[in-house]
Image (tube, rainbow, N blue to C red):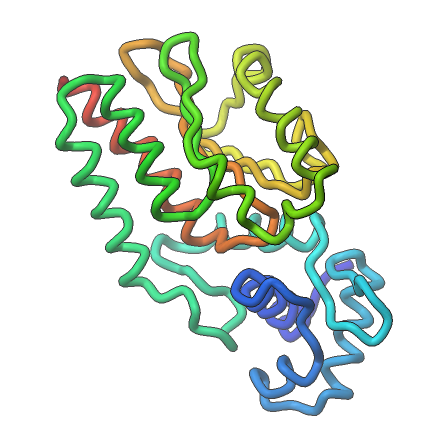
Length: 250
């Protein structure tokens, strides 16, 4: 189903609003954002739900994005020029300056390190601080992980089954990275797209970079599917580029 401009904007607004409030987004909220009637919004939401991009978790509740909705959003975001942080045109949560500031924090923290392992660990710890997600990177044959406590404070992971699914993903991530060797500079696996832990409702965002350890080193984050993809994608991409530049100079 090809979405109209209005349907795209409503889908993107639901994704961006849900990332902020962590509760289903209702038609009244969207009607205020778009300055149209709630009935108009409900009609468009019904079409988006029929297409599989959003879902209604409870009767009379608002809507939440599905994995397909997130994938549509991420693909659209990836096609935008650098610096575009919000796609809905109705929201202004993701301003340019905070993301630029976060990227500068990464640059300072990575550039201040003189050893490869310290630079990579510093980059991971910075990603944890800046995103609230779990950070990870390969250092030689080891997988460095930081921020497990931060990850499990997210409301999605109050369910023990999802926690177990995330743990399974982490237990198998290092051998999967070695075997699959994702080839893109930025790789995004959303929810059921994950090779392991498909029921975890988590997104894995990783960047490949060259290091003294390997031409296929990885750094990234693992967080809930509900997150600020513009910010996280920018930071993970930036971390990979900065590490490659810094370690090449070291």
